[in-house]
Length: 73
Image (cartoon, rainbow, N blue to C red):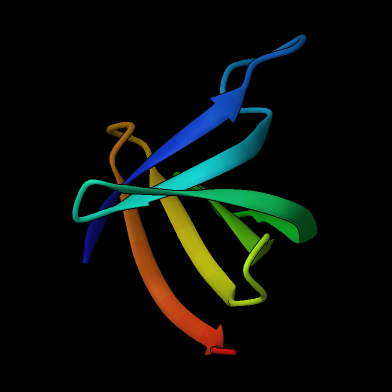
């Protein structure tokens, strides 16, 4: 599922997600739990301020997808 992810861009682009937007609703990120890199993509495991945990992926094309809803509260 495609999503929009707002990011902090420090020394590099998309350094740290700050919010995820689903169906026009902005959900702030409380914590980045994990980050890992693939050959042409970047994954973030996130805890939202409302308590949900998500796994999002940024592809080489810059598009973001929701890969998994890890835990819903």
